[in-house]
Image (cartoon, rainbow, N blue to C red; front, side, top):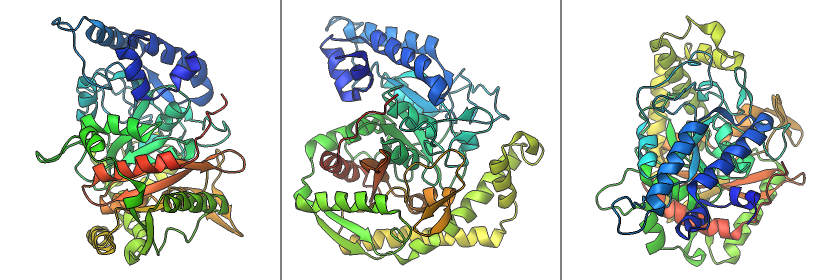
Length: 474
């Protein structure tokens, strides 16, 4: 195995190599840090690289894993033990700079870890750095005015998506084995789709959002980005809140591996296919046919309120974001310190009336109910839709043509992702092909409320049916 092969190995593969003593956590961590030093100047995936901490954590992991069995010093914390990962830079890390991609927090060092990161540390994960993001997670391009744009590893002239663009780019470029991002309107799934990796947005209440610089508390979620569904499951499991009756995600995956022949998938009649590029739609249809060839059932499902999700999502996210920035004393007092796009959205949030906000919350309640009833009545295990209507746009591209019509690029990237945030249900994006120019395309699977185990099983089946992406040529 070459160094490049090792850098692009899965978490599962590296974990096996550790336990066979073929490589050590220190060796792997040094490899990833060397790749970051070499490639990050081109990609700009990281704001902060925590090399000293990562090496100390890798030495501890090596001492625990490689101590002879039976000794008190031997400890195996599980499959994440000794695995280098990254965190989006709006996630609190004790004594480590946490900027949220902003000028306002350029010197902010939290006094505590976010619970999500604390649980991953306990599972033995190693932190190699904090990743770049759209300022305050309030955008979908990661074209950051303060720390520079993150570039898509598949084409350095294109955006990686956002707001978790640095996380997705780092995973896609072999600069970590997985990352933790946040998702308010698609901010994990959009960059996963555009960068050709896997991104999971869990359902409401499943992963703590405490210790995260918020965007919209009603719509914020925390989840993993990784190269495979299995790796994403490994990252999600330590953070995942479950009832006493629920098994871990790992044991659920092992105990009931899903057969594609038993799968029942739903395709929404409304909204999702109204505005989609030809190449994305072709890849999506190929993915659906692959399911059907393996015996899966695919049927139409009606969710009429989907057409109201864009306005409702805006009327919740805009005022909640503005309220948080006002409460923090940053807006409008420090308006000049924001990038133009974020400042303009904070100004829009100040204009949303209380009535419009409350109406949006009422729509959210109806959307939650309608998703639940529609999926239950149709008897489907998950919905299958594209993740984004387009592949990665160019950096600075403000409008994108689909057919003969130009559409606002930001709205296009958000469009198919907002519904799952509004409904509070789990969703995952997996790669399902590429455009003619070699840009990744994402397939989105949306699960029923509190049904992450089944969704992950379906995604694992799906990944085995999809074309395998080559590595980015860096």
